[in-house]
Length: 222
Image (cartoon, rainbow, N blue to C red):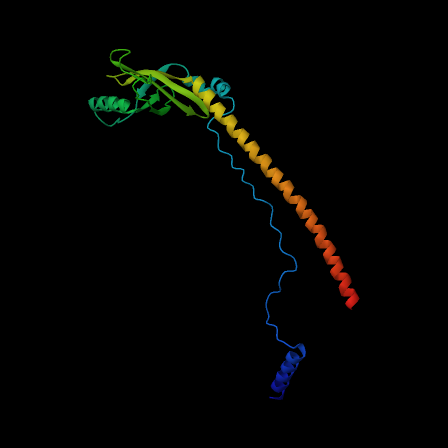
């Protein structure tokens, strides 16, 4: 009981001597925190094509095999009767799609076809009993075009892949534009980084000077 009374008297005495009571809590910072460096926003859109499409088309072994005219066959609805497959093949082509396979290596392709009025991608009139098809697409980063014909009775024919010069030129232009945009964003980011480092260095010198002045004042007080 005597110990508790002494503690209370000490607490009252301390509070009286200080004049007021401080509640425990975090002290306010001496210096305002500086903002961090700007975060990079250097997103690069994945290109659809490789830089040198024609060289890859002429040197890649797969493209070299597919560039030779070879037997092709319609692969859709293989579990259905032949007459139904014929109807479905023609219906699909007129809707703008079909599935063809190169029989030499088993490469299967889902072709998209333009059915516009003046399109040359689907032609039922060029040769009786056959339909001639042309389908442009990008394969392994190279603009190519499937070209061939299919017998409407047997659902097989001859086809190959061609290098699509026109589409390749357009995709190359888009690729160059995307690279230039990325370089511009990179230069802008580097400029922001340099602009951030200069004020930070000046702030560090000011901070060091203020700290030294505070230490000197403390020594004088002591």
